[in-house]
Amino acid sequence: MAKPPIRIKRSAVPGAIPTTGQLALGELAINTFDGKAFLKKNDGAESIVELGSGGGAAYTAPVALALYNKNNNGSTASFNGTETRFQLRSAAGAVVNISNALYVVISVNGVVQKPNTGTPSTPFEGFYITANTSSGYDVVFDTAPATSSDFFGVLSGTFVATAGTSGIKVLDDISSQFNGSLTAFTLKYSTVNYTPDYPNAVIVSVGGVLQVPTSAYSISGSTITFTSAPPTGATFYAVSLEIGTAVEGVTSVTASTPLSSTGGTTPVISIQDGSTSQKGAVQLEDSTNSTSATKAATPNSVKSAYDLANAALPKTGGTLTGDITLNAQADVRFADSDSSHWVAFQAPSSVTANVTWTLPATDATVSGHALKSDAAGTLSWGTAGGATGGGTDDVFYENSSTITTSYSITAGKNALSAGPIVINNGVTVTIPNNSNWVVV
Image (cartoon, rainbow, N blue to C red; front, top):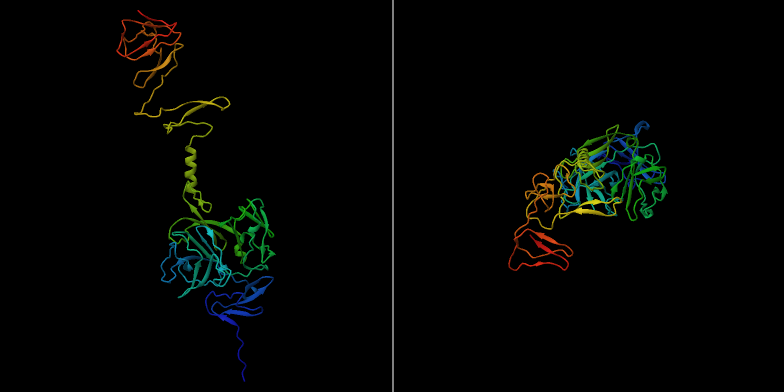
């Protein structure tokens, strides 16, 4: 009697990889479509490794993802503020196989979303991956992304690393240690100190904001050191993408178009290694007044900001080429030598018509002269109500012959007028004691 053939777990689905829950230690699985074999490994933490032929390491490049409608009709999806479920495909529209949420990096408006650690939806965290009703896989967010939010997603490649930390790992939460002053912390995975093979392949989020490696933080051994201390109460999330040497050695930074749910053309920066595998994206914003903590400025906005600053009057002084308007009775102030007090000019509370005074071209030639107007805005030097004459002659004192407004001579002063003088009805001239008014 012939013995029945021995069969091991298998799948004919392109790209299918077993999970740790699907294999027992020592059990094998084969993908008959891809011609690949897998086993479960436990070096303190369970992981799935691929058995490459001839001892070589099998590598599949990461796949950039795009959103499609969950009804699988092939049209580009968009966030509308209420929908939480979308199909994931490649940027070219091809169906992709995603066996675990931990193999996907997804950001919404530049904020990295936490993948679900259960299979597929327990516990329900930032998002989970589930099979589409027709073909491929869907992403389900715990909260509906806001209308027109930007989407970026990448499915990590598969690579059997030579080091013992191969696999994708969600690191332990260290946010309980954040106190606003500490900057160095110990990374842990399953409560054990964790040293990543490739420090630059660790995705770190603090307070929901993606941190930039080597700039915002550095990793040495199992210690992560932040440039600025994380604030008390800030959240922490970190994923180590220990998927082989393809993550190591970034060789280029190039501009491209993002995988946007709106189909827009907002530029992003794609960080690539020598195999041109896309590793991440930073969204740029063409604005000179942005206060975003997650978007970088474009070269155009940097130049515009520079031009604005270059055209501004420096605080240390400079030359203006146009008019200056001070609104709402603002002062022109002149400070004293230690800048503790000042004198100022300001406009009256109400002006019915614009007035411009033109200063004289030279200083007064006679001491005691004052600025006086010709009633047309032109100022000149001369005696203020004193004697005048031809040239510089101060000969003639002129006064009106009719007094129309009541007046009091200043106490202790005498007054002189050329008469005759007419005092209108109802008008009073007051002469204080010890003062005289002489009419000649």
